[in-house]
Image: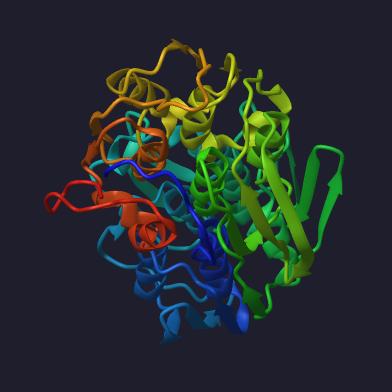
Length: 439
C-alpha cells in the first residue's frame, strides 16, 4: 500500500456478520420459511450455512446475498457422522454449542488452525450447568457435544462480558425445562435477543437480566440484514484521519450495543453525522457521513469498551493520529480473539514508529502533535492471519510516510470479502504483492 491523502465515496459495506449467522441458525430451527436479504457472503457465514445443510436444513440462495431457509423445527435437525467444520468462525462454534447441546444426537465441532487454538470453555461451562455434556481439548476445539435432550434452566450470572456466551446459553434455553435467566456484568451485543423476538420468542428484560422460558417455538420470518458496523468502522476511521474528502456509508446497522466506536471517536472530536435513523426488522439502521477531523486523545470510558470490542484495532490507528495521549483499559478480551490483538497491534505500531505502551488489558498511545505530517513510517506488518489487524493497518496508509506492506491476509475474506475493492474505490492505494500479501 502506498500513502494516500484523501478518501471520498458513497457506498454500502456488506451485511452484518452477527445478524447473518443468527438468521441462519434461528431460521434453521424455526417452523416454516425464513427469507433473508443482505446476507453476508463471507467464509465465516458460509461455514454456518454448510453446517446447517449438513444437519438437514434446506437453504436456497436465489442471489448471493439472499436466502430461503426451510426450517425443520425444534426437533428436526439430523445428526451426522463427521465433524462440522466452522472454518475461522468463533461465533459459529460457540453458538452451535448452544444450539446442539439439547439435541438427541452427538456432534463434533472443528475449525481452521486459528480457531482450533481459541478458548471454548467460557461457553461450555454454563452449558454444563444446564446438564449438557460437552468436552473440549484442554479448553480448545475440537468440541464434542453428547446430545442431552433434557436440559435444565439455570440462573446464570456471567463472570465475564461475552455476547457469544450469552447467546449460547439462550439458544440452549430454547430446549431447557423452566425459565433460564442470564445476567450480564455489563451490556453486550443483543442481536440474539432481537432475532429471537423476530422469530416469535418471548423474552423478558429486567435491568441487566434477560429471561427465556424453554419449549417455545420459532416461526419463520423475513430478516433484512443491515450493513455491518464493524466493517463500516474501517471507513469511519479512514474518513476521520484523511486530509481531505468525505465518506457516506449507507444503511449501516446502528444497534446501540455495537456503536461504541462512534461515541469514542466523537469524544475525540470526530465529525460524524448520523442521518435517516430508522428500524428495519429487528435492527436499527442509518446513513453515516464522515469528514476529516482534528482528533484529540482521550481515556476510553470503561462502559464503552464492550460496545466497541471488535473495533479497537482500527481505534488504535485513530488514536495514533490524535493530538495527545489516548488510553484504553479493561479490554483484555482482545487477547482472546483471532489473535492476541493487543500484542499484534503493538508489534505493528512499533514497526511503523508509533510511540505507545502495551498494557495487560489495553494500550496507551502517545498521539501525534504535527497534524500536517505523516504519522506512520513505512514498514512491514505481520497480521498473523487476523483480518481486523490487516484492514486496520490498511487504513493507516492514509497517514503514512512510505509504503506499508501487510502479510498473512488470507482471512480478510472471512468477514469482509470486498474490502479491497471498496477501499480502492474510495481512494486508498492498495496493491497486491503476492498471493498471500495484504493489499
